[in-house]
Image (cartoon, rainbow, N blue to C red; front, side, top):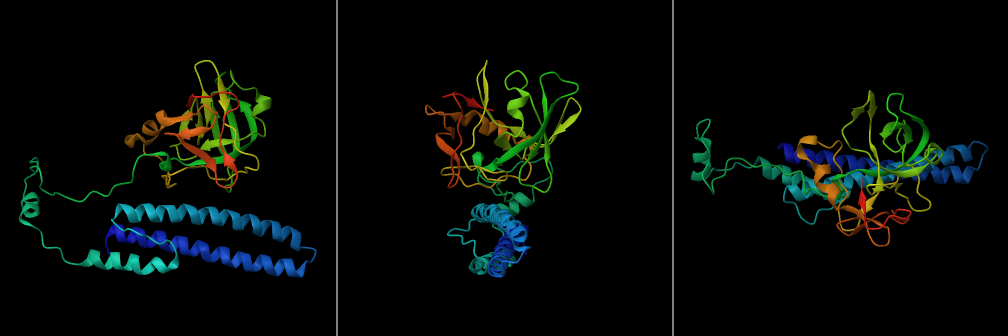
Length: 293
């Protein structure tokens, strides 16, 4: 089985397993609601939260599966269990013997240091997908603790609940723009797949997203009802974020210039609205037509 087919198969298995877990949790929820014993409310709340987390994970894996399928030339791609034959067919095709054309043979015979002429095939390159907002992991988080950086007067050090097993440490240069009281318990939008980096000795594991001008910065506002772990999407773009952005590929640097608020102060990417599905758009308090950083 080729590496591409193996990746498709693994993604499909993960999505299917997550869907199976959701079904199991739903059945347990129904049983608890029927019993209504003293322990049921606590267990019910826990299971409902697990159910929501699994739904989000299913969507992430489905989008990755779709993106992987597209990169391998698979169209009309189903992300249900019924798509298994498609994955298997792709894997089987990868086993078929390929008879190289004279052009390919010629390329293989090139000595080290030689280059292939135009129109000759050297090797197949697997594309990571288009570089757009779909590659950026934007999520809702809650700042549960914040303090000033001990070695930098302009930096805050925040502990952020992103709906994960533990909080993340994120460092933000907002001391001159936002009071520490406004930071505490703030619900905001965070970029979660930046490569962790040290900022004056403290490792930052993400970035707090803000609307920004040369003299004013505003933390972006999630819609009412947003909770830690909610996923931010852009209309018309497949959400398929890299686990961690590779700095050499300049993905964030390519995407960032097209992240702006519009005339209605709504966050957008190339005009496409950023929002939490079924909850509403991301916005700024007062800054219209400015960059988002």
